[in-house]
Image (cartoon, rainbow, N blue to C red; front, side, top):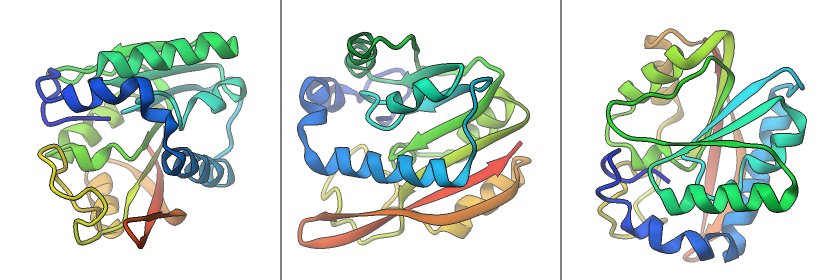
Length: 207
């Protein structure tokens, strides 16, 4: 969950929703669908250090933790990170969390950077993609999931949604300009909302 500014100034909506975020079945199903697509697209091994960018409560990434060496969740919302940590403890999982602020510092190196349903909350993706490349080990991978371009029906009016989904080719071209290669795209899953069917893509690439 990544609001307008990385200093948390616009994170109130996500802060307030953190405790009940996982109660919405649609969110759980989206996370499951993207996670399944990820596992089909990239091998996950016990020597991998993984970063989940815009991790929220960990709906997407926590279930991957037993498959990798380490998992770090990054978000602008402290309450979301607190839920992420609490869920990890309940599952007996060791994870790290990092509060994202300006300037963007992700640490690393990581072998894989994940992000699911966070990019549409980021006004300018180029600094994010540049930070991803910097934070990845040589040969590391990105796996980015978000909405295909839509008409605004998915979120409705919102002051922290900056992209009404994306054209896949635009994301891939932007990643290529920042040094990523072997880029591939696929449909990760679909979701029903407001009487419509929306598709989510998964784009993978190497640093």
